[in-house]
Length: 602
Ligand code: SF4
Image 1: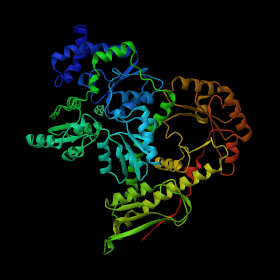
Image 2: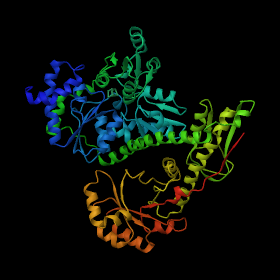
Image 3: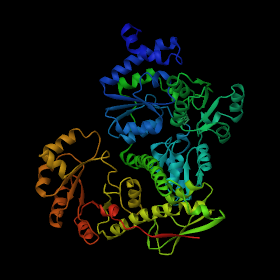
Image 4: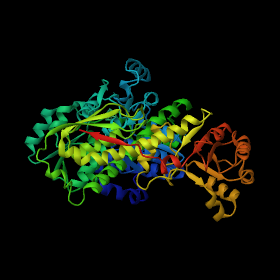
């Protein structure tokens, strides 16, 4: 195709943006392809997702969304497009398919692999699990669906430390990147069992090379990816994931920078930060570079190279990716909550009593439970003490989720006396709260007859403490309902009362559900009859007597997942579960959980 006026008008704004990093002679070849791809993707309702390591003509020319692997996976789960073209490598396309199994996911070149991903198989993980029984597995997102299916939770280079710590385990199997494993080991107390995988791009960088560039460019800021060897990271001024590196440049606007990562990333970030001078150490990823504009066009035209993953594998592998996205929400939210709680106890003048103690000596303190309970919140208590003084040692004597007896020492703390006293109350309050929720949840879980029935919490939580209370529910053996209004569609009595027509409201919602699950709440069998047969996911029987609940479950259990709520107590839960209902949601386990009493003894 010729570079005619129509193509020029459509693509010149793109060239103006990237002309610093793409020569004009190359642009003449790129522009007609970009024009064709952008036109065709609209006609086919396709979305193009591109990784940060793609070349600028792809990243800036045709991508609808360009980011790191995690953000691409999240975007894949949200897109309304019928087709997803992944401009990245095979594991990224697989992850997009896991997140959006009903969509057609295409990879322009099926041989675009990844040295990390191919370093390990599902069989290898199964052998490791056999060797280290009970030790949770964290896998980098750069792994195949087969490996993800054997994994407890996935991570990215941006959240690897958070994910490892979120498990509350002493030991974690961390796969497959040996350098990222070293980076995590350095930043956590958790023992890491690693694998031998490496990234062919990042392992090539050396400390010598970094030091030479620093010498030749006084004042240069060097930022490195955690997949690099540890001596390279040590020689750098900052280490961060691809998104972390990009954010760093955007925020700090250094005069001169070197990004120790794949070469195209520097080009793409340079386009967005024209005032920053980039020194580019050119290590290209041979797999990422297999993706080219002609291959993208061909794949889009013929809808070829579709990613196919068996349904059972999708289910297992998706879970490990979903858990990671939940931890992301949990981590940032929880850190905020902890910081606010600490400030609440110290503002405006700090601990005005402990100031008068003469000796700020090193002491040993014990946290002891005053009640039998299911323990929860140990990692939160540890963080509270660490915020006060990084040097405090917090030794766990049990694990979140365990049943403990009155008098049990749950943790031993070593550190400076004033820092321990300053943190004591806030740390104990978190233990009391989470253990309280876990304990009451567990009482309900134990009462139920029907073992395939789940106990769930609702949105009836203490303002701003939802994440923590929902965590407690899981520790007690319960499950989490939707986190908030944006997670799932739940048509309740008030929606029905305001709309006036349950059947029409449900039909309208199904039409516009945009990938969200739909639950419809009914409080009588007449309402159920008006909607039965419509294609939604779950039916929620609210406040129905046992006789009607049983009838409702019988009528609908082949079509929908069934749930009961309203007035559930420890006395009646056994009978409710005997109706065959699959889920019972209970507000009491979060809004009225009695706190468990703990003490700190010196
Ligand atoms: S840059 Fe490294 S980790 Fe990324 S796709 Fe290439 S080989 Fe894999």
